Length: 140
Ligand code: CMP
Image (cartoon, rainbow, N blue to C red; front, side, top):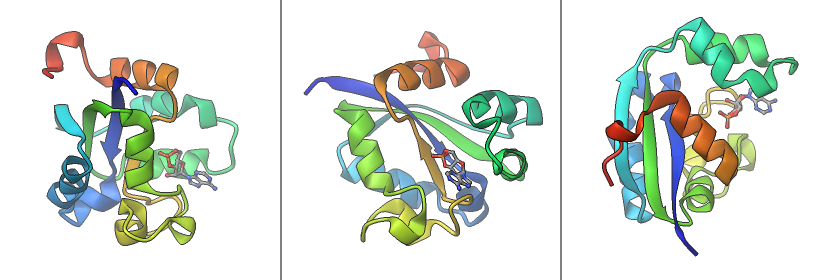
């Protein structure tokens, strides 16, 4: 397996409950390294663009409202097989289906307010990292 980078977002439900450190701890304990990080308030246009692939889904409007409801922390995580590892640490999208010990099982409030986002494949990861960070922001 090779060293990969993936885009992670700590979502507004988690920043609101002051869970940033607890979530970063899960990543670091799993061997993922935070090589870029920024806390920010997403605009509606940014959230719509980031989740553009979901534009036709019934939950799109609500998702954009949720993602702009408070600060997020966007991060680049690096490590061996980082994309799959991050998805394993996050757990299933719906916390009701997430495995014990995962971030979403332990912290998520609902399928929408599910505490974290992580890229799902290498091409998505490259595009999502570029959406938020320039090469100069990433220090491995
Ligand atoms: P995320 O992994 O960021 O990708 C899309 C997001 O849409 C998802 O996490 C949830 O926050 C949100 N969402 C809300 N409803 C649903 C749903 N029914 N299925 C999938 N994702 C949903």
